[in-house]
Amino acid sequence: MSVAWSTFPNKFACCRNVSPPIYTCCSRLVVIRGGEKIHPVEVENCLFKMEGIQNVSIVGVPDTRFGEQVCAWVSTKSGHQVSLEDIQGFCKGKIAHYKVPRYLIVVDHTEFPLTPSGKIQKNILRERAKTMLRLE
Image (tube, rainbow, N blue to C red; front, side, top):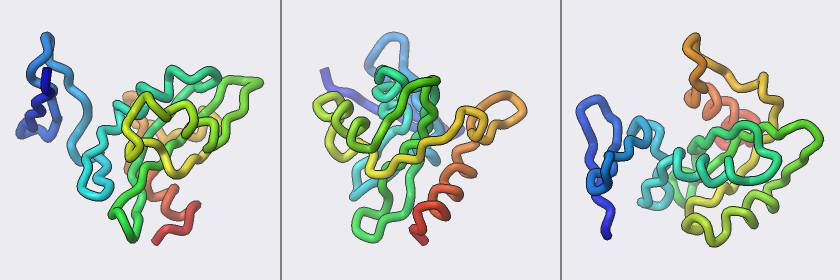
């Protein structure tokens, strides 16, 4: 079965040919790497299955060759450590190679900027990642 995506006026993407439809994320959060669209939710769902991950957020950061690269913000459960190699190895074979995070930022779960309703503010994470990784 092929996957058909629709975009709605409110900028949310939807997978149409499954029942019920799967709403993924706001289209402005989509990472475009070398012309390929990467929905952060897909990568986040993969990483949440990894042992020791407490919270994860995927953002796009600037890249001179591909336009954007995937950056993972991760907080781990107490007593666990994670490295970029661990994450890349875990993702290999589970998601497409171009969706695997190129950058990893490990933070405490309290360092995720949240809205009053408790959602992660990805625009702030993106700006912090650009500064921390010196990508501008």
